[in-house]
Amino acid sequence: MYNTGMISKDLPLLALGIDVGSTTTKIVGVTGDGSLGWWHLEPSDPRIETQVKTFLEAAAQEAGTSNDLPLVATGYG
Image 1 (cartoon, rainbow, N blue to C red):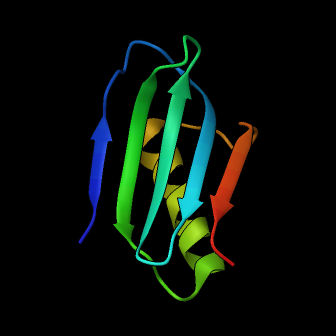
Image 2 (image 1 turned 180 degrees about the horizontal axis):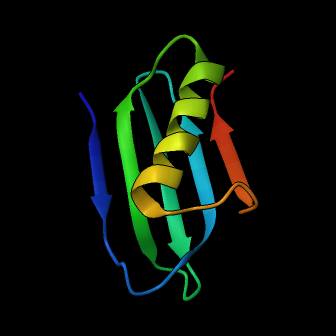
């Protein structure tokens, strides 16, 4: 089960941020004015590398991001 949302399609996303927590993993896309443009949340998977790859693919597919966006990551471990 996961949750995804697109807040604004008017402004392109300029950066991504991901947080891998012990219970949930979240990724957000931030627009040029600093507002939240897109987000995705789901329970954390023990295979962190696989889940991060899946999240980046979701960002590309659902929010139209490219592989050259800056990415900030936080999390446990």
